[in-house]
Length: 71
Image (cartoon, rainbow, N blue to C red; front, side, top):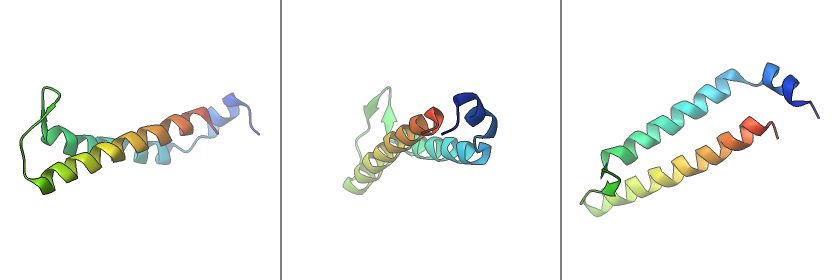
């Protein structure tokens, strides 16, 4: 196992950027369907899309936390 400074020096920059990009993409979908933190009224399919996007954001943020620990 590498020590943390070794990981920081060699961590995949492109993978980190891809994670951030995906988080931003799905967070934008969530933001399109919310106003001041509240979900806007919408059709069922839009509500499902927003809910799925929120789950994806949550999952990706969890992956990013693991990525940053180097595990």
